[in-house]
Image 1 (tube, one colour):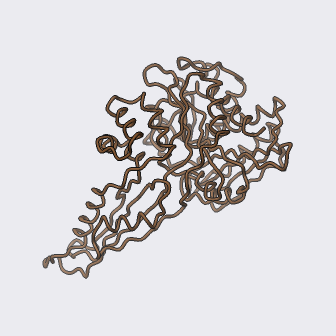
Image 2: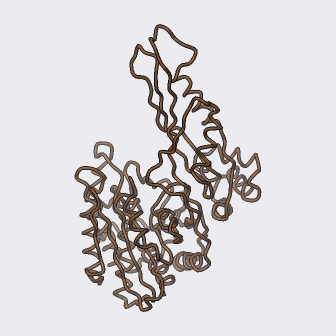
Image 3: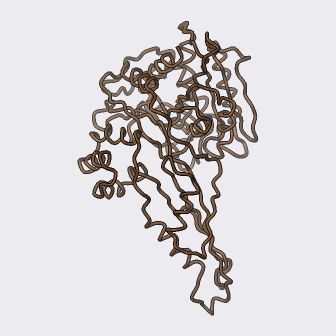
Length: 456
């Protein structure tokens, strides 16, 4: 491991820092990756929880301040570091222990056998998000060993089914509904330049789009396939979903997405950069909308998006279809209830015979968190303490995370993974997931700095 730590160091990287903390973070992440914490039979998320509990106890946390609660085939963990002023609301550090499925035959190596190779930690969870979990734990352990005493309680918690039903995240948020704020280490991170290897910018998330699923249904009496009729349920559904596909929701912007467009534009190609700046200045700019809508990386950043993800229909090869269903998955811009989008989809389909139902599970509508000066300042100070010239700005997440459960209770939550990574090296949920080892030392420093500034 020692050789691997020095194998790759991005230009302009921060000092190595506490090598013991780096090695401890990697060792803990490797052990966690080796546990197959995938939903279903053989789910080892409870073993990950025990691993993290043992690391916290070894690092100075009282065993009585840590609870692991079984839930169906998984579990969740909540640990508390008592502060000196019980009148203050706690600071919550949030993460999750489960990962998405990975099949060894598809990877270049066993996804559940972690290894360090060519300067990268490899394995399922190396990016999403067992290394982040380990860094959060070791950052707190390092602060304890250094004698730091927080004024407010620090709570570190890990949910056990964020990648599936997200039920434990909802439970945890309800238990911690009285928190001051949440730093969610699952999500936004720093970006390393593809050519120079130097850190470009750090984008944190203060909000996220609402996840929603809608079921479309078309029915028909059917009949014998030798006697075609003017109305065919499959053809009717096809026309409906094509109208939905071509429908464009109103482009929108808020202070989080505007901050991202203005902050990140300088690292994009000229046409995209110009469109980002133009859209930030005027979100009705048609030329900017067309440019950004044509790029999969940006279409989700300028408003609500909906896409057909499943279609099922017919019951026999020689019969006219009697029932056809389709699923439309939407990512809704903050500020719009799911019922409003359902009505808009119904209007877009323009088919009175089609029914549409909200079948969303594991999601809740929430507004974006406020741009609190103390939080923004703490993030900027932490990043600039390691990388003084790196740009820091907000962003709006397109995916769903446990942050939504906290926001539903009025607790502000901010996604702040302290790791820096090249976009081309980001394979979370995909094949051959990996994260650069050289990012661990600065991540520990950034994490510790954010925690101390927001917990004193």
